Image (cartoon, rainbow, N blue to C red; front, top):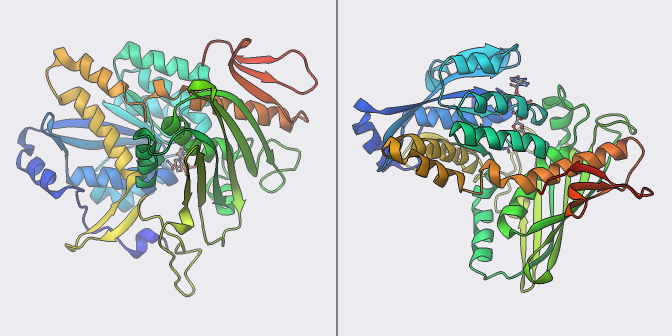
Length: 449
Ligand SMILES: NC(=O)c1ccc[n+]([C@@H]2O[C@H](COP(=O)([O-])OP(=O)(O)OC[C@H]3O[C@@H](n4cnc5c(N)ncnc54)[C@H](O)[C@@H]3O)[C@@H](O)[C@H]2O)c1
């Protein structure tokens, strides 16, 4: 039995009841955002579905936009089977949506007439779909990591500009209240210069051997989850990425000499003003035993000239034991801030958290661009949306550079050439790989990162 079956969402509550009431009062002449979805997997079910359910019950609202209805008009997925199951199970709360399958599922989705598209396919399939969406002049929201190379990022950035739309990436960890507090302390200079840190994110084996088994060949957990922390470090502390190194282990998900990685250790080095530097180690795995009490174990430590920040998912506050049910069926350490199902004090059932908030926030940004004033001022609103560094693709360059560098290093390692280092924005180019024993580097990206 899944969590969802145990506690059905009976009604969907707005996060701010007052605004929902206002929105409902004025729904006669509502603006409408038609949204398409690409990918109907785990993350759709976990965060997009509750977001769309809630928005269907309670339109977006701000004084500038008035009420804005959000309609999920279609889901494109490889075979359409999961989307079909979702329609059967959640049609009453999601509303009717079309199901489009391969080939050309994204084109078919666009043919329905959409304003924005969210992409939640495996990470090596983001680029193609994102390019198609932007070329059609639709706003884009893509799961992390946005894309796997700076070349791809260049194409998407250019298309978004040419077409006059926003292109954004999902980094929900930036909305975690703990990370917001960290950033506030840094931004208010309560915490001074960062000097080093480590982050770890350990996924259970069920992810690599079950959930992702279909597409995991040749992939690594670093790209999939370290990217959360790459972005957190990049966004919170600023600075210039200068060097990337990485290593990892194989032998559980695939053969010990193959290209599929069990775990990855990534190091990022940054430079700041005044000649200061910092180094961050990010350890990731998707082969942690399934009965590990942390389930998705997450830990960070950042050290500063004048302080230390420690965060630990298992020490955040809640530890639950239910005989015969934890830690597999129910989780022992529950992150109630990310995404939880609740009975609200006023009796409604709800599902909420920052994993859902980040999607609503993107749609609110689209609504602001399209509906918050006259067409003559759209360009100004568009620029304001693009200036938001937490999610705009134009601010994702160092994160994508780190991912591209890590993938190139692991690729060399898998062919018997471990120990490479990638230099960022050095004299030889934007992203330059140095291999031990070779005097000549390989330029991965010539322009400045
Ligand atoms: N924000 C987060 O914390 C978080 C958590 C999990 C996953 N993700 C991200 O979400 C994305 C998807 O992850 P998931 O866990 O949902 O994966 P999943 O394997 O459960 O689902 C992938 C979905 O994509 C569809 N798909 C695959 N290839 C396609 C194609 N060519 N065209 C159309 N649809 C296609 C599949 O049919 C499936 O519906 C990944 O980028 C992942 O990094 C983010």
